[in-house]
Length: 102
Image (cartoon, rainbow, N blue to C red):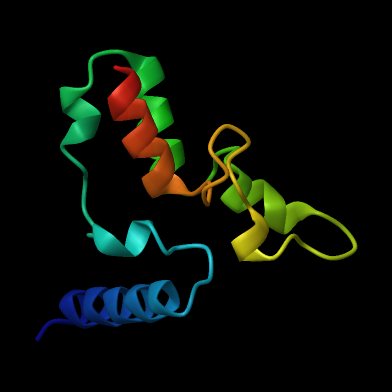
């Protein structure tokens, strides 16, 4: 094994370990692959590419994320509910509601 291959393997192992231990990566863990994602070429509108990327990276404004920003104590996960239907407002909920609306 070359030095480059060994470094890549170590990086991927470390990345995978950090992902498994992350409290923010619950949604991302289900499809995480460390490589270029084809949807970036498939989605023609920059707005959709950006929104998809933000959703994957948990850099969005859903209550599942914004609830953790509250100070001095974050909102408990079970209390981060959608104001429209009173269900947990996470990425899965958003994607399901978004599919119904379209």
